[in-house]
Amino acid sequence: MEFSDRLNALATKVQNQKSAIQTEEATKNAFIMPFISSILGYDVFNPLEVVPEFTADVGLKKGEKIDYAILRDGEVQILLECKASVGNLKFEHASQLFRYFAVTNARIAVLTNGEVYQFFTDLDRPNRMDEKPFLVLDLSDIDESIVPELRKLTKENFDLDSVISAAEELKYVGAIKRAIGEQFKEPTDDWVRFFTTRVYEGAFTQKVREQFSTLVAKAGKQYLSDQVNDRLKTALGATGYTPAPVSESATAVASEPIAEKDLDRDTEVDTTLEELEGYQIVKAIACSEVKPPRIVHRDAKSYFAILLDDNNRKPIARLHFNGLKQKYLGLFDDAKVETKHPLESLDDIYRHANAIREAVRRYRG
Image 1 (spheres, rainbow, N blue to C red):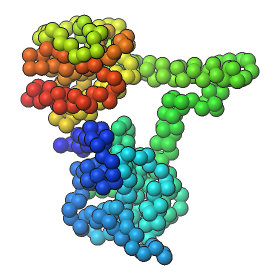
Image 2 (cartoon, rainbow, N blue to C red):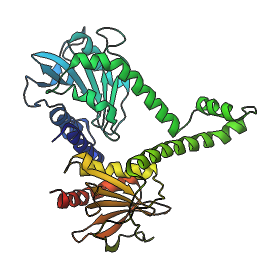
Image 3 (cartoon, helix red, strand yellow):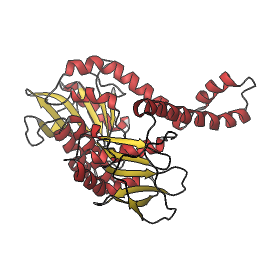
Image 4 (tube, rainbow, N blue to C red):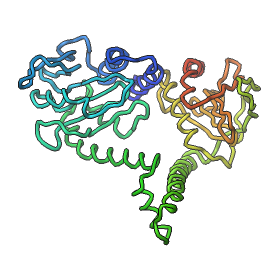
């Protein structure tokens, strides 16, 4: 299995199981040990590679332990401190990492809750761990641009010098991207003022701020949607295939078998960010069975199709989101008869992970 496939498979596992994980030990066993072994490629049962409960005396503190130390040629290279998956990560959680970083040869320190992995080094001051990570891996929303850098920390491709040399750019580019993302989700007053003063000539009063807070947020989302649509139109020629009728019932509804012949694609479709998010969830699930490039999508006026090998004879799922109060996930049986399952939120797609994988297995060859 390719590196990206393994990463997507672990991401799917985390999403499927994180609600059942309540303790730090359970997080280590279910998520972090698989990350060390299947993603980074180190043998968690070989003490020459991975040392759990690693101990080193730090000043007056004796016998302190850090969760994992990864060794190469007998030298500590990577330190990992783990927290339970139920909580968000804070720098205060990294206090032991901070101390250990200064007394070992490690140049990489990782703080994780099994879903988010924050990678630190010593860019600001030599042998002193930075307060901000240079790389953040979020398994709920994998940033594909950091995957090549993550691969450099694997046992097979370990290249510490390359990682360190790229760390400063990664640190600030990543931080800027996250800051921009936060502004699109919930614009601050400064962000709202920045755009308002460029399109509105009046005084920036409290009333204007309240009015433009909504407008700036709406414009940002529409801009992102337009960019996605433009890329899709370029890549796919704005094509999809004939829509199927959608039931408004809140219970699973069976429809007719899909046609076996290629269908004409719609020329007027509006692909939404919500559809693309749903597609990414289905793709993450399906990638446990096939390589990611084989999972593709076609949008149509009434539904968003997810296919294997861009072949409408190999339907994996359909997203029925357009203009509906009740959203549905369409899944297919052996006869290619679609059943629509109501969704309260996108996370409900994970409940149908087994059916999605079974659909892929039927076609993959």
